[in-house]
Length: 318
Length: 309
Image 1 (cartoon, each protein chain N blue to C red):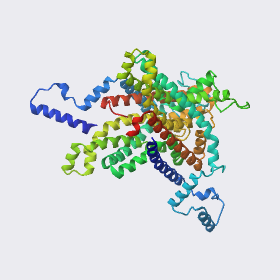
Image 2 (tube, each protein chain N blue to C red):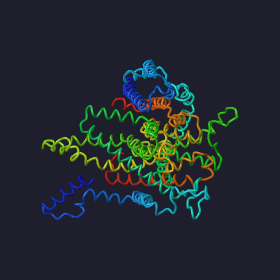
Image 3 (cartoon, each protein chain N blue to C red):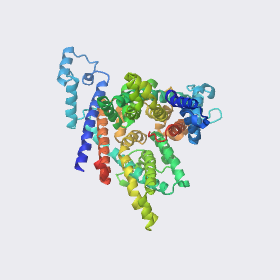
Image 4 (tube, rainbow over the protein chains, first blue to last red):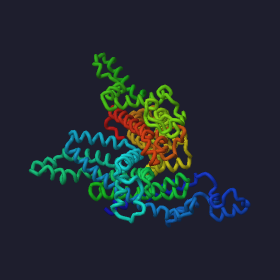
C-alpha cells in the first residue's frame, strides 16, 4: 500500500510542476510592461531610473531565473498581491475557499447519495417505467449546462414558489445559524449536483446490472437470502467499485460549475472571486486561484486512487 | 470516411466477380452503406438529425424565418410579453426575441463548428505524431494534455479568454485551441494500435515514406473516431460558448448569441419579470445539445458500438 501511494505521488508531483510552468508562462503573456503596475506609464520617470527599478525588481533576469524565484515564493505561500487593491492573494483566497468547499462538499454528498440510490433502484427495476423515466431524466441532466440549471432553478424555486432565498450566504442582519446557512446552501448545491447525480446514477446502474448477473449473486439468492440483503450487501458493495473512480474525476467539473453558480447565487466563494479576477484582469489573483484549483484537483485524484486501492486490493498489484 | 471504407468494399466486389460466384446483395454492402443503414435504425438519432436540420435551416434562413431584424429597436414595444406580432416577446430595447434567438443560432452554431474544426485539426495532427512515433514525442504530447486536462475546462477558457479579449473570432479560437487534448488522445490510442498492424509494415516494406504511411494508410482508421468526436464536441463547444458569453466574456452584444442572450438574466429582476427574454435562448441551447448528442450517439453505434468516447 505504501509503495502504491508513493508511486501515485511520484506521478502527481511532476504534473504539479508542469502546471506551475504553464501558469507562469501564462502570466508572461499578459500584455504590458510589469513595471507599469508599480509606476503608472503616464508618470514620467527617467529611463535610467526605470532600468534601475527593473534591475532592482529582478525583471531583467532571464525567464528561467524569474520562474525559479516565483516558484520559491509560491512554495512559501506568497502568491503575490491583487492588481487593484494590493490585498495579498493568499488572504483573498483564504477568505473565499471555505464557502466554496462547503458548496462542493454538499454537492458531492447530494450527488453520491441521490445518484447511487437512484442507480440501484433503476438497476433492480430494469426496463420498468421508473427505469425508463430515470434514464430520460439522466439524459436531460447530462445535457443541461450548469448556468442554465442555475437560472431555471433560481427562477422556479426561489422566484416563483419562494422556497429558497435567491442568493447570498446568509440572511443579512440575522445572527449566524446553521439552519439559515443550510437554507441558503441547498438550492445552489443541488443545482451543481444535477450533472453529478445523473452520471453517478448511470454508472451505478450499469455497474449494478453487471454485478447482479454474476454467479455469486445467484448463489446468494439460491441459499434463500432475501432480495434486500442480496442487493444491499452482496451486489452493491462490488457495484460501488467503479463508482468510486468517478467521484474524484468529477471534482474539476464541480469547481467549474462553482464559477457559474456562485455568480448566479451571489455565493461568496472562490468561483466568484475568480470571475472578479477575470473581469478586472487581475492576473496575480487568476494565477493564484488556478494554482490552488490545480492542487485541489490533483489531491482529489490522488485520494480517489488511494480510496480505490483500499477498497479493491487487486488494483495495487497491477 | 470515403477513402478507407470504400477500399474493402471494392475488394469484396472484385472478389465476388473474380470468383464468378453469385453473391447475395446483402454481402456486398459496403461499410458506408452499412453505417447509414445502422444509423437509420437508431430512432433517437434520426429524431436528433431532424431537429438539428430544422435548427440549422432556421439559422441559415434567418432573414426569411424572422419578421424583424435581430437589432431592430422599437422603443415603443419594450419588454413586451409574447404576442402575435412578437412570438417570444421583446427585450429591454424592443428587439424581437424570436428574431434574436434565430440569428443567435447562426453565431452559436458557427462557433461550435469552427471551434471543433480547430481542435480536431490540432488533435489529429498531434495525436497521430504521438501515436505513430511514440517515445519522447509521445510522452511530451501526453504530459501536455495531462496538464491541460487537470483543470476545469471553463477555468482555462476563462483565463485565456481574459487574456485574448472577447469577440466571436477569439471565442472560436479559445475554445478550439483548448479542446484538442480529447481528440488527440483518441487519435493517439488508435494510432498506437494501427502502427503495429501488418498493412503498415507492408507499406513500410514497399518503401513508402513515413508521411505517406501516416496520411494515406493509418489516418483513414481514425476517421470514424473523429466523426463521432466532432459531433459530440460541437455540443460541448456550443455549451462553452454559451457559458463564456453568459459571463460576458464571449460573443459581445449587439451580435446575438444564445449565451449572451442569457446574460441579462443574471439580473434577478429581469430573470423574474421577463422570462421570455432568456427562456428561448436557454431552450435553444438544450434542444440543440440534446439533438446533437443523439446524432453523435447514433453515429457511434452505427460506426462502432464498442467505441469509447
